[in-house]
Image (cartoon, rainbow, N blue to C red; front, side, top):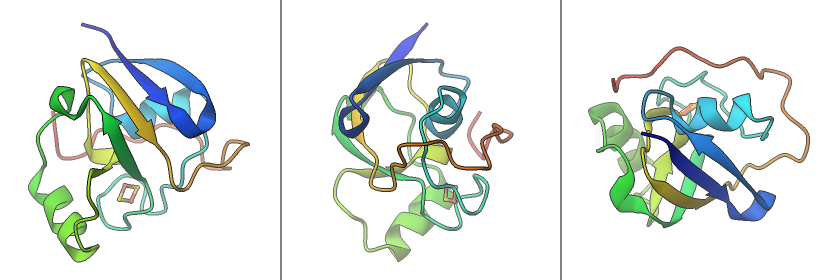
Length: 113
Ligand code: FES
């Protein structure tokens, strides 16, 4: 099944696979998003705001839950490195960069399948 990620503040949409994290999907499509810890649910810099379609996202992992709790549980926020979708989701990226960040290689999957 193929999903779609609409990035509101980048004015673009990309195809998504349930086997690839949202972080890796964005990076593979040249969308610059911060990811300081390399996808380990430690830094929180890859957080995304879920505008709609949250029901199509993978459930919170324990690592993601711990990080979001430490960040004060911002409403409608997920970590792109820990989140997968097979449906359509509309997001905003607080750390959006107009040009891809230097570290643009995909990371291995996080704690979720
Ligand atoms: S890249 Fe650090 S928490 Fe996602």
